[in-house]
Amino acid sequence: MINNPFQNAMKQLDNAAGIINLDKDIHEVLKSPDRVVTVSIPVRMDSGEVKVFQGFRSQYNNALGVYKGGIRYHPGVNIDEVKALSFWMAIKCAVVNIAMGGAKGGVIVNPKELSEGEIERLSRGYVQKIWRLIGSDKDVPAPDVYTTPQIMAWMRDEYEKLAGYPDPGVITGKPLGQGGSEGRSFSTAQGGVYCVEELVKKMNWKPEGTTIAIQGFGNAGSHMAKILHKSGYKIVAVSDSKGGVYNKDGIDPEKAEKLKNDGGRLGCYCVGSVCNVEEMKTDGPCRAIDNHEILELDVDILIPAALENVITAENVDRVKAKAIVELANGPTTPEADVILKEKGIVAVPDVLSNAGGVTGSYFEWEQNVKNEHWTEAEVLEKLEKMMREAFDNVWETKEKYGIDMRTAAFVVAVERIAKNIKT
Ligand code: GLU
Image (cartoon, rainbow, N blue to C red):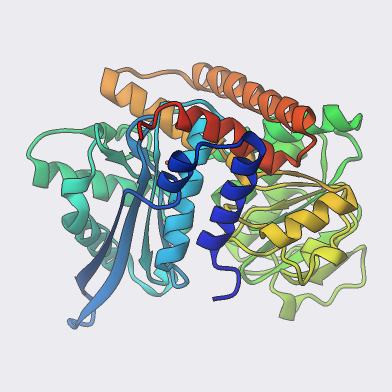
């Protein structure tokens, strides 16, 4: 497979291991997940027929605490992707210094083709297959691409039925009022915003006038666009899986989202998507762009917020952004990283810049196990402190060794994990 995400992840590990002369036994341990399960999930479809879906859970490492990581519903899910994502979760938790390990789950499915009832049965069916492996004291799933707070609520319910006792901390990203935490719905984006702010300080830029393009308009990308817009940054391009829009004068992401949801149309915003390219025939300052073009715009900050392997050896030469802040997991391949460094483009890596999501989840889990409820202000105060500290730590490590920020983040994380592995 081209750009196998697990091979990419192992290359990133090797880079960090080389810098710190990592003990070779520990390096060896970190090359494999503790456990990967593959499950078949039979689902009664609305038509009456049974369809069997394939699902995975990879528990990579729990040296720092319970396994932690989301569940992805996507047609492109595969075992190497899930393994890579679970490894990145272990690194991510260590980068922000939370006492959790790394895991990830996935189901091969296009949820857009399923009814709500079918998604509920699939989600309950997935838990029926993995419930003995999870729990607030073992492995704590969460949302990821195309999974929602509602899905988390169904999964919690199914788990508690099977286990026979309440365990709200078995899963995070739940709806508010059903064990969810204030702030969790936008904590991935908020954490990314703190990283953008720190980066902008390091670059001696000002928020006003800093131009930003965001690929992906899901939970992470849409919240990121809205928060940055409110703080004065100029969002010039957004896109989703169907296409995107560029406006050199700036885009109001609230409007883009509203029009996407309502199916309305105004100026350069389009129907049924951030932009339906087919319908985009305007001569104004805006133009329709596709998901590849958005990566090649001449902007200050490019934020990939969709899927992995979008900045590769093939297109990295055409990337014109001055900096990249990764909100997706694994958007940049190791080959592309080398070229970004040569070109002097700073890339704030996923394991740091999207760690606000799992940090929010950690707070949710902590509230659940302690039976507490924190205010949004309390959650954000803690999140801000942890994210800014993590950024500083990674930046200092980058300066100390003269390495890129990704390798620096891995160095910080691997040192913390290694201390807790006995060989
Ligand atoms: N899916 C998110 C991530 O990749 C959040 C994981 C979590 O909250 O456990 O970081």
